[in-house]
Image 1 (tube, rainbow, N blue to C red):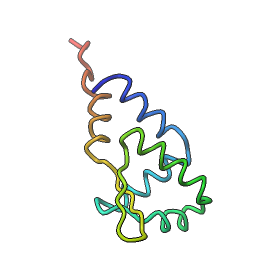
Image 2 (image 1 turned 90 degrees about the vertical axis):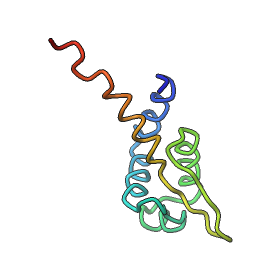
Image 3 (image 1 turned 180 degrees about the horizontal axis):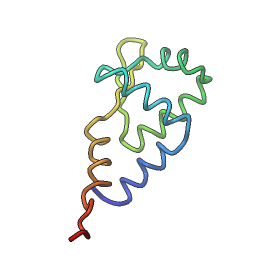
Image 4 (image 1 turned 180 degrees about the vertical axis):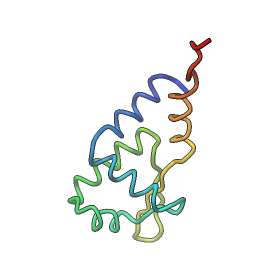
Amino acid sequence: MDLEVAAKALKELGHPTRLAIFKRLVKSGHRGLAVGVLQEELGIPNSTLSHHLSSLVSANLLSQDREGRTLYCQPDYGHLQAVVDFLQEECCSDQK
């Protein structure tokens, strides 16, 4: 993983509201959650939630799918794992 890509993902997860959103979506599983459910559960105004979701999507941490009038957000577990792997890839490599 590129350093810039990892930094962007970590930057977006470094905001408390975005981290709360992401943690809630991870809890929901691969299906994700409808935006309305996120809004209701987390008590975030719609325009604010939309802004935070856009940031997470731009960092490739979330994807969104529309089913009729409902927009669902799903965490990208592969990208999340790639960020974790990037952080750990040289773990303890200087130890003898």
